[in-house]
Length: 200
Image (tube, rainbow, N blue to C red; front, side, top):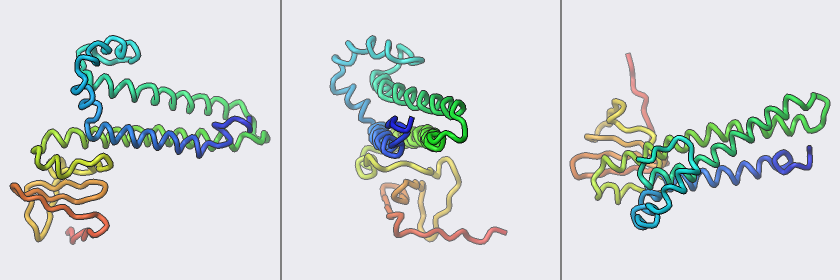
């Protein structure tokens, strides 16, 4: 058991998966799959049936961009889920004094955490993708970067920003953005601090 790459180098295998998920989420956030489908519309229309056969639960009415997005997500999600189930089963069958037990438990924990990371990364990427549709093309061009993820939108939660006025406040993983009319104020999060205020 100790010679299995998944157990021996679980951290390295995990890192490769994390890098793929981060790259995939960046493509989702900036709508790369939809743009690719649009540029090569005729090609992807011809491939829709083949893509649909690979996927579970994707409607034949789904856009080619959505289908392409699912085609790249579903196999990895299934793969990681199978790793977790296999490692948990292996952990149950390997008794405590066995030297590989600690490796199995460690790998099962890592890949369980990877499942959570994948869900969170995709949720943030989809929320960010949805945000771009609600902004003007000028704002989109200024704010949209592959690594940027929306964490909070003042349309979803009440936010007060003083002394500045803002119609809308967007909190990203790397910046605080205040929108007022056609004005955009962007603040690097490394330079921003939050005063919790006095509730009471």
